[in-house]
Amino acid sequence: MPEKPEYGNWVSKRLVYIPCVIGLVFLGLAPLFLVSVIPAVLFLLVSVYFAYARYRFAPQGGNVQDHIRDQVLANLNWNGEWQALDIGCGNGALTIKLAHKYGRARVTGIDYWGENWEYSKNTCEKNAKVEGVDERVTFQKASASALPFSDEYFDAAVSNLVFHEVKDTSDKREIIREALRVVKKGGKFAFQDLFLLKRMYGNISDLVETIRSWGITKVEFVQTRDAAHIPTALKLPFMLGTIGIITGEK
Image 1: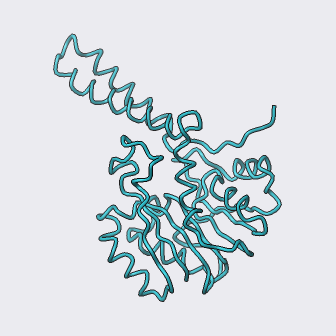
Image 2: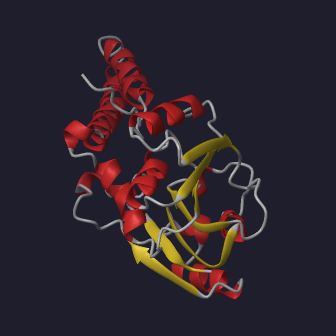
Image 3: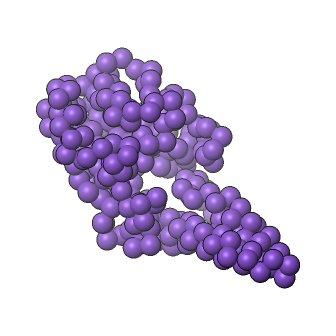
């Protein structure tokens, strides 16, 4: 049986198990303290919700997370020549998709691979080999807030649901600016993140204008939260209800 890539699931098992265990503990206290039924029900509902989300993200549940990655490449208007960068590559899924779509490109995936995520450079490299693109794909550890590349190094750059996770930069607009720094003049970009989350990015029209003021030739916001492949239950604000794509040309 051929080996399969391991791209993981955006909902970790602990998000399912921990509230489930807490809920069961409260439920066990119900005979002594009837009021404990309330937190028991709440924690168990949280567990059920994340179990549902994990299932829908997985291949057997519709592979929603793969469709979301596809949205990024669908909004990258690039000819596929030369060098591309995937910022926050996780287990390499989007990096490898980019390499498959653009057969002449060399693709670099960077990630910090922190302990909060079930991702690693080793898994990325294994996945690239399984997918047959390892000769054109490289991975390295780096932070999205300080990319280890010179100005205008890449012909294209992508990122998927990463910028909001960068802990060492409070102003997430600076993460966008850093990503664009390494894109060549005339290069293309497509970044998907929680851009409709106002407490993080402000009004989307102001964000677009700010990016344009950096000297970016073309910039557009594409709302992706209402895509047909995203189940209604996953469109809550803390899940996928605020996602969208910033795309354009430097």
